[in-house]
Image 1 (cartoon, rainbow, N blue to C red):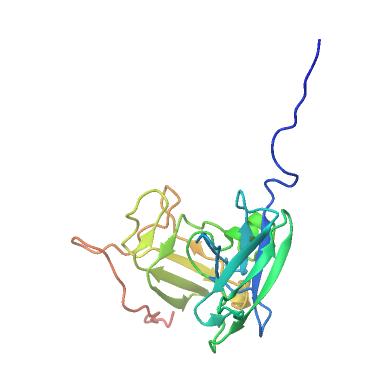
Image 2 (image 1 turned 60 degrees about the vertical axis):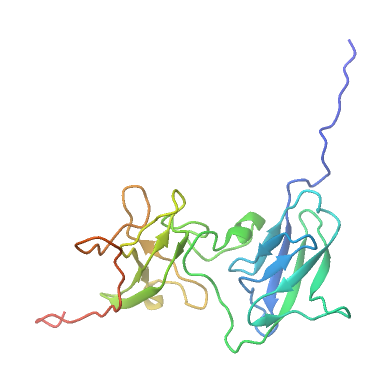
Length: 229
């Protein structure tokens, strides 16, 4: 009997991403929401660690040019005016890009939404949040109000998206977070939100008002009762 063995197609390291981290030139901190765009227009955005986990069939283990741009930040231009960098996208490898901040304030992180630390998780990077990619099934929120009440920070939002359908929660979803002095994260690092959840695990309605239509809050104030509580 003659057995013929053949290796499956694919290069060594296939399936391993190339990690790109974009950092602030002044603080050295990773910058969220930096766009990395290939020559043929494929776009990637850094997560809240400033990380992109790049895994693109056909573009691995070769020189790939990335246009680098972000509001309030600026990457150096070359002689043709292009602002970007060619990187060797070695599977399992990494690169670090430094971007100049022209805003006075630096961008720190996203508080709500899906994939806050998506690329960091894919790259095996350390992340500060208990739920770094999807918390309370919340993909994104409109506006925010918060106040300190009984030793916790309470948060309430407007229109909120979910994974399962284009229409989500329009009745003020809410959450709490621990204050730094009571075990919460340093705001410099992040905010661990604990949403009020419905039976499906999605951030539930907290303030539905009589009648039709959404509920939008305009203020949130803790008030003492007659006993001063």
